[in-house]
Every structure is written in C-alpha cells, then in structure tokens.
Length: 277
View 1: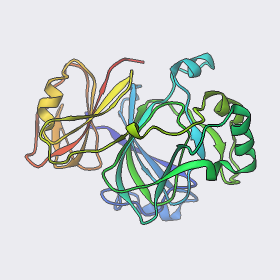
View 2: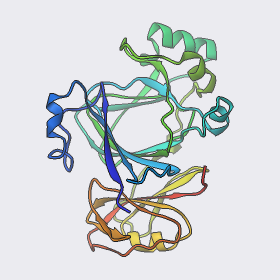
View 3: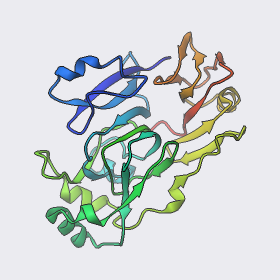
C-alpha cells in the first residue's frame, strides 16, 4: 500500500520545499504557516506502529525531548517516542543539537531552559547529506535552519518542549526535565553508511522497530516477511500490493505481504516493526 502524504504546517517550516515535493505544495505561498513535516499515512486511517515522515526547516526547532514507553504510559499515553533521522539535504552551516556538552542535574537543566542558556549547552554538530542519527527517547535535541531529513519514529505525536526561543508556544518543563537524559549524546549513535556495500546495513535497532539501508531491497524484505515493513526509496522505485512508489513516497507492506519488484537502480531505507506497540 502506497502511503498518503499529509502536509503539516510548522512555524519553522518552508514555503518552498525541495524536490520531489516542490511542485506539490506551491499553494503554500498563500498560507500563514509553511510546511515543516510530511507524514506518510494509510488512507484508511489505520494506526500503524511506525510513522515515516519528511521534515524541512527554515528556522530553529525548539529544544525538546521525548519520553520512553514506560514514562509515557505512566502519563496515560499509548507509547513513548524513539526516532531516527536520515539527512537528505543540508544548507551551509546547518547543524543538529544532540545532547549536552556536559552533564547537568535536573535543577540545572530546568534553570538552563528558563534562562535560555540551554541553547549554548547543546552539542551542536555540523551536518552533511547521507548521515544517519539514532535518537532514543530521552535525548535532548534541536535543529537549525536548512535541514531536510527522513524520520522513522514510533507513531505518536508526543513532544516535551524545554525551550522555544521566545515563540508563543507551550513549554513542558516539568515533564521534559523528568524524562531527559541531561548529558552528552553518544557518538556511537551516529551511523556511517557504506553506499557501495551490497549487504543491507542495520542503522537503528529499537524494541519497537528496526531501520536498514539497502541497495538491494527485495532480499531484505523477503527475509523479514513476517514483519510489517516500510520502504522509502531514495532512488528508483519499488512495487507491492498493486502500488509503485519512488522518491518521496513510502510503501507499506503488512506482515505476510511480498514485494512485487524493484527497479535495478533502486535503493533506500527499509523499516520493520519488531513489536505491535
């Protein structure tokens, strides 16, 4: 099943999106807000365990954090939010803020969020196209302008904002401080992709889902036939369930469904659900 794009307006989004979405959203020039995210979802309203989305920034995102499953469920949510990012494009000077430059106590983290010094305490990392970042729940993170990426995440819209540069949006200081890992981001969570390797590369492994990079998508999908699958072509196209998808799309295969085929030049990201939560 080819998933349907849903365009989400954000104050930090873009009016002009990069290809392949540039011709689709030209009408956004007349909108009060720009497009920050494109969620790829089923037409039938099915609640899948994984959400794939594109994200585009023209301003800084809030400094934020997500809870894990246990923390979220204690507050009445269905799940927490583990996520990971594949960088599709960057403008000069674009950076990710991942973790802090030093460890803080909860009281110190709260004070830094209140007085704005948390922005300077973030570990800001320069970016290049093709990087992949694993971002477990609890990771304090932010983004600069000039970033385009693909995100795989647990399918829940649950974000605790620590700091938002004075924008008139709600902060969630108590919740954010209680779930945040207020320390450095491990370098081991940054994956280096070998774009020439024929064997599929496991990039992210969470209790809820895995994400691979694959130059040969069909064998990888066949070897996980009992798992729900999300295929995001970075080049070429793939077909399944009567649908053909290419760049900017996402093909979803339910457990037991098979891939009908893939073009010889296709490669991309492939996610598999490892649980139904």
